[in-house]
Image 1: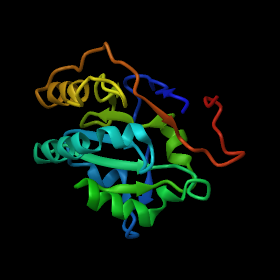
Image 2: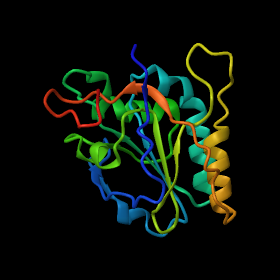
Image 3: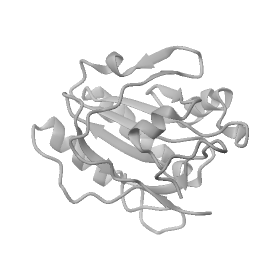
Length: 192
């Protein structure tokens, strides 16, 4: 398994727009979250061992911060022809199994992943109320096979700071995981 790091999109970047369906066919756009004081965008999938490693804590974190007003959205951009376990039908099952309370959207064209310069699963992007990027990086130091517990401490610290009207730490570690499974010929310039 090749470990791919996040591209670390520059802080201050404006959140790219999107219009994507969930597994039930309901479409969500960036504007649907306009009233939230913060937006967390997570590039994720069903089959990746890195996402599976954090899924319980990710579900807890999602619920806890949604209760505090943070909009949370998961996006799956993987090639489902090569990775059928990431299909929208399987995404619906994953929402139920994991207990996700946030929309889990499918980026079939992979254009949204490219707009965010997403590279791995999971890849986290936290935007403020003006939808400027304030945090991009790892959830915490835990990785599959490590003895480090999954706590979400890095991501939680960034969201707590933002909700308290403070700046997130500028020391941000890249997320790491499996690369996004690009369709052949659709790989972005930053891949590889």
